[in-house]
Structure formats: C-alpha cells, structure tokens
Length: 384
Ligand SMILES: [Zn+2]
View: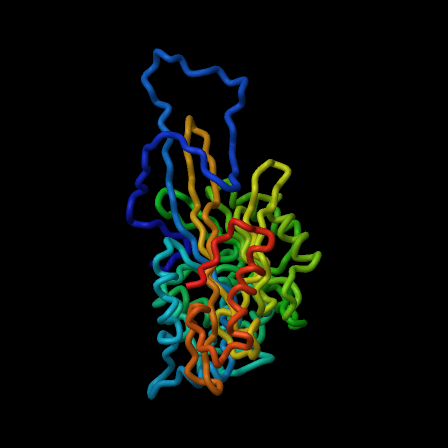
C-alpha cells in the first residue's frame, strides 16, 4: 500500500474478560456516578472488552560517512546486517518507530557527512527489514540538503510501505493525519522538531518540516484525539550530550500531554535521558521519554554509543461505551553501537557490547539502568 493511513488486515480480536485492576498509571474515563444504573433484569451486557497492542520506539538513526562506507556493496549499500541483532525486539512489536535523523536523499544527490548529512536510500530498506513501521523525519537535519533530499527520502519510505511523519510532500500531505489501526486500537502519530540548524524553511513550503509551535501542536493533537484512541508524539528537542532534560523539554512534554498526547518520544541529545509519567489536569497520565539516544551513529564514548528500544503495551478497555486507554509495562532494552575502527557497525543489546569497547564495562549497565529508572522505578530495564 502506498498510502500513509492504513488499516491492518486482521480484524480486531476483542477479548471478553472480567474487569480487572491494572497497575500502574492509567487513563480512566469513569462513568459518572449520577448516571442511571442498568436494571438487573436486563440481559447481562456488562462485559468488558479489551484490546491490546505493543509499541516499540528507538532514537536517532544518524548516518555518518563511516556508517555508509561500511555498508557499501559492489552495487549499492546494505545496512540490514547492522540491525540484525536487534531485529527480534523490533519486529515482535505490533508497531515500531524510529527517528531517521539524517535524510536519505540517495547517491544521486551526493552522499555527505556532518554538518549537512545525506545518506543512501538503502537505510530505509534496512529499517523496513528490521521491522519498523513509522519513521519520524522532523529533525534539525531535515533540511540539511534541501527540498530534494526530503522528497527523495519520503518517496523511498512511501514506496517501502513505511509511514513517515514530520516532513511532507505538500500542504495536503501534511494535513493528512497519520493513523494506524492495530488489534482494534487506532493510533495517531504526530512529529515536531525545535528547529533546522538555522537553515530557513523554503518560502511557502512549511510542510517540508514540522516545527515545535505550541498552537499547531495543540490543535493537531486535539484533532488527532477525535480520530484515534491513542496519540503518539515524536519530538526532537533538548540539549545535545546532556543526560537530563531541560526546562523547555519538560514544558513541551507537559503541554503536549495536556493537549492529549498519550505517549511522547523524545530525541536529539544523542544520549539517553530518563522517562516519567506526566499527570495531566484531566487526571490521566502520559508516558514520556525525554531522549532515546543514538540508535545508529558514528560517535565516540559510552553515552553516545548507547541507545535503547523502548517497549510498552497499550490497552484499550471498552465498558458500557466508555473507552479507557492505559499505557502499561514500560520496558527498556539498552543498546550499544558496536564498531571497530569506524567499521563493522552493529547495533547490539548493551549486555552484548564487547567489553573492550566500553569504558568501565563492569559498572556501566547498572549505571544506565539506574539512569533510566530514576523517575520511573517500575520501568523494567532488560540487562540480559
Ligand atoms: Zn538532532
């Protein structure tokens, strides 16, 4: 399918089961206590229907020159092997998303490294092969190589059947909300970036990249809420190489949660920043990760080579017409960008990182687990 709003072939499979209490945080639309109670003589229709889908997210895929040189084949590029070891964790999720930080304009535009990146389109094929479904394109590097690199990237992802968000082909394309139905739950995806490294957005073409603009975010999220059960926001923000979110990140996440974003996936700092639940004035809680770090990039040092796969379950409960959405069981698989002398790139679970590549290898895993759990003690960090 070439469209960006698609529907899974498999019909929703509601499971009828007794109501149960699910911990931890939940969004609940409670029936008003003043509503008339159902007569006990009427047929028993108080069943609870639950629908469940799993979601996975990773951070920056930033294709430096040593990464594409390593992927060179006789007749093109092949990045698939780099994702091989983490593929099982991606493809097992019902929906998986990645942040494609550098555009994939292809060789015809000339490949390039920092500060103005352009990578081979074949990165998209590897993302598809690894099991990703949704690709965020709203980044500070979106406009690095101009409009053509953006449109080449989009056309290639679209051809692969991947959903792209945050950068678009036209105003019409930008307006079309990206929704996906999975197991009876409709997800909507929106994306924004803080800026484009000072490169001006071409006049009359604001659809090329979605910027963080409070009113736009609020109206798009509230529109998304009318069309979907769950709103997922990718947001590119924060300060590079800083392990904790800044005031602006906190404010943007809070604003988006208040507007109705259930899940907020942050990236840009190139290092991991922790997660938390944001309580909204409506009494529900949204999950935010402030930065997912680098998933694939050529940067040095422990923190820049560490990323992760965030996993969660989304549960939709329907009872007497009331829909409840809960984000449950957040889990985190820390990952490591393995490479030797800027070659042999491979993303591996952190516990498989070659010890000679990691400083303080003995204490690094617990350090990362502690960092990610600091505001969310129930977060399950996989350590092997
Ligand atoms: Zn960035």
